[in-house]
Length: 34
Length: 535
Image (tube, rainbow over all chains, first blue to last red; front, top):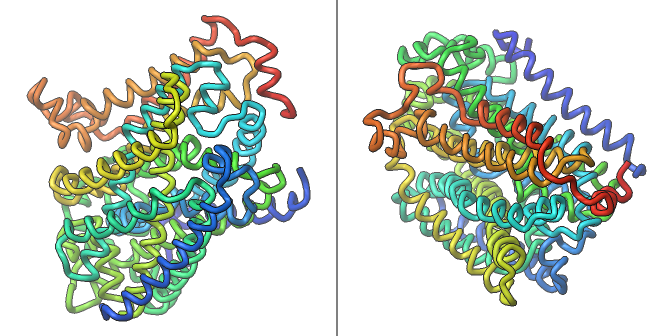
């Protein structure tokens, strides 16, 4: 994937993008809460 | 670099920084303004300030250089930085820290711990630990900036270090946290611009995302035999479990900083600067993306710099060898040789911003640890808190400067000194503070004995392993050699590669849990006051 040979390196790209998406989704969902 | 262009850019930048610092200074009227920015900072300012304080020249130059050596495996640190450093920190730590800090009228991290456990000793000891060890972390941040200045102007490292420290020293002794946070936010914005350009330019120069990655993957045969023997299988491959590279990468670089971020005094205090939990929710949105654009870009570019150096006839070798085995000089060399000259000035500002935003907070925290936590609260000194704080800041700056001066001569060739120094400080904070910090936020039954026992056990085990077991530090520190005639007591075994955090943090957590069965419980009224408004 993305020209990366190693499974662990491909996985970390997925994890990074997922964690940024989590932060953005949380920020939007809780924008006016609390 | 064109001196006129550079001087103009730097002067413009410093002018804005001085204006924002002055604005913060004008709005600083009370102790709460000075220490926690009046608790009414805008969430975007708080988010950018948190991010730019967290990310320094250490992350960009030091860890970027480490990525050029270890490869893209370092991106697991970026993942932990986003997941733990932003999401977990803000959602599960930040909200409780904000409310509890307000309930207890705490203005610093040691004061938070001292008030929570009703212990002057804990506040004083935490403050002292921060005051003594913060200069090490500040020194490696200074080193990152000075390495780049030295490379860009072709001047000696020590001259660059003096110039860099002087600029920062003058600016830091100005206003309180409000001025620091306003300038942090501006600097965070500049860092975002600089790193975005760096990422785009690198991928364009190397033929696109997939092409750049493929070329790097195909270079695995160029790994020098000494590195291959330690488990290096190429720059897009994770080292095999149990090899020396695996232990260094996972325990020191990834876990040390990835977990340590949760107990950083200069970051925790930022949770106390916003007026509601809603602001923390909003800060999460920008924080995750910001960290990705900082460490993610630095590590990707660091690893890909190998492609540039190998394919460029002027170098024709991998990044580590092109930089003369000076890990901390890889990113400065890449910027000055691969990118347009005008970008060197822009990146200089990016690094200046990254260093200043982190150093100002490091020195602010070290100063308040000396003035507020040790002098005013622990030993009950009468008056002069602000003066002691400013003297504390000055002492920290001088100590950091001297450390940055001697550190390069101390470590063996090829050591990522900046990354190591950062990991030591982050690891030390995690082992000393994290178990009792989690306990203080989530347990109503945790007592003073547990907090103090865990703090001392974590700190002492980490110190012992740093001085006598972990060869990367015990060898240059020479104490083990002087007492036992060898660089490490674990020489020849896997333990010499295991970061102190991996042992000291579980010891600290277990000690905290066990010691909670002894000692008096805190008065119920005190605990209820701490948890007021917390479900």
